[in-house]
Length: 121
Image 1 (cartoon, rainbow, N blue to C red):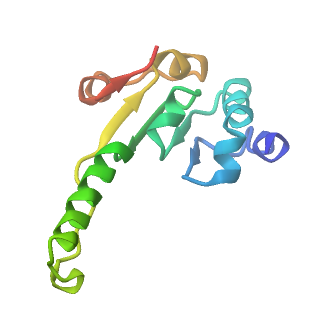
Image 2 (cartoon, helix red, strand yellow; image 1 turned 90 degrees about the vertical axis):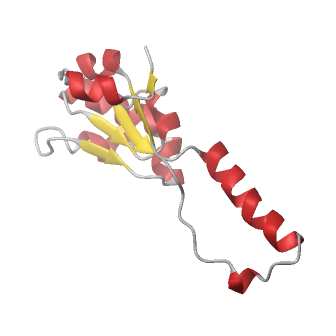
């Protein structure tokens, strides 16, 4: 992953890491490329911000588990699963890491910092 991400230096304005086991397992190598090449690294998984991504906007898996549990409870209480409407994850969290942003050569706008639900230093 390190070699692949290094090929982005000079060719990409930013790196986005989706929720993918291959990328997430090598996130530190991608972050190093971001620092070395002054390319901001963003992620889909908010836990990746503590590992070096500048920011991530995503849902909280704990909250999603609670929402799922509520649906399961409805089925366990006798409601037919087919009668329950499709429901999407509710709410998003914005995690930011201003220190990593600075190391990758960018400053987070105040509007982003103010909206953040989690700030990693």
